[in-house]
Image (tube, rainbow, N blue to C red; front, side, top):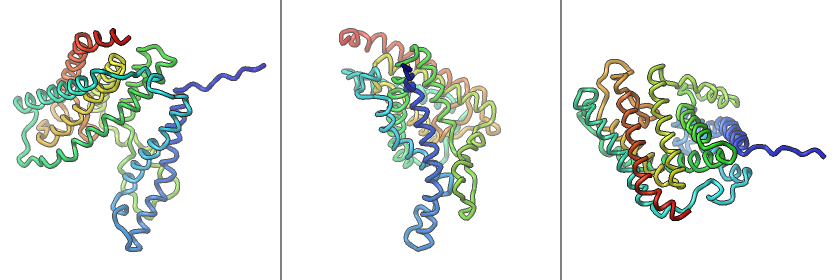
Length: 314
């Protein structure tokens, strides 16, 4: 009797990711055409204001969210414990510590950079932008931590050693931040059924130049490694969410208040460069050192605050 080998859970995640990309690319042109038709009929011009690459980007994101639940059912996930997560009695403390340590260290880099001339304060700071930054930081941190450090990391641990699972999750964390459709100006009449696929495969055109790409990937890798190890160290997502939200909030607030004074698009590299990925990813040796220091502080926190409690719960 032949025994069929079950498809691995991580492979199922990759299949669902490919399906989300395909569905998003397929539905983007009809939605774009619908927006143009509504505008032509005088019904609404809201959707017609978005260029095709924006419509494609939103369709890819929505299709991934829609397929999230079927993916979890397919891989056999039934409860958080299956992902090596459990109730965290120090959830509030973890969240606050993550927010404070990430915001403070980013602020130190920002003020130090302004002091030595890498940055300068903007003449007219639009503080109203905080109304957009706060919910963005909250939403991005929760969604990415639940998906990557919750689902993906937990599923990787089903079949991979701890370090390998962290490495795979961190690599995906780096890659997904640089995958986005090219901002190509396509005339509405030039959009075809295959335009979504044509634009989706041109993501390399949106990659930053050499040095910025290397420093940005390094920052993301260090941050992703910290987030994964804290998720495993606490067996919950509260500390990673706090760190992630603090980083996004502080980096985007820095962009709001300061501007890079370095010559050229690379800024003051190798010390400090411009932020990438909508202003959320720092570049340069100084921000990288701040991330490493964040990791050390988190390690001390886990050793002296969480682990005694974790041992009592074990």
